[in-house]
Image (cartoon, rainbow, N blue to C red):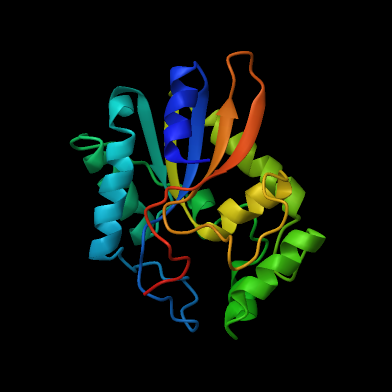
Length: 218
């Protein structure tokens, strides 16, 4: 689904929550147990975040932001708001969108699993089996994430800036994407959408921002 379809859904009376991956950032050092807490987004990431916001500019009066506490997600949300023409946006941060994710039973154990550079392989195994060393159960974690998001979703449109692993895990659990691989992994600024219809029904989709062809850092 492109961002233009998100606009059409909003015009049709649906509410849309976007769990949006941060914009382009430098590579994360495999030896960093904070998963790159202080990494900024690049100049390209700032530009594409503003472009993302510009595509949703018509909804500037009805948008709500939230972010993981990591620097790159906060910067992304701020630049999206800037692109929407919003000055001094309110962007609360929540650990559950970052390193305190519902998907992590033991963040340190996951960091140890990823240190050898096997990020994608470990993620794909987790999605296929629903479990893995350091991970919480895929399906109960997705239920918890969705409940938390919907409980905090008060506006017609929400942009919750978060991270690719959680977006992919949620979409895999909801079968919105049949199977992830390195080719269809969420790129920078792609989103997992929760669409809430006027009658309360929900559906899920991968939203391709179309603003970056990169899935890994520079």
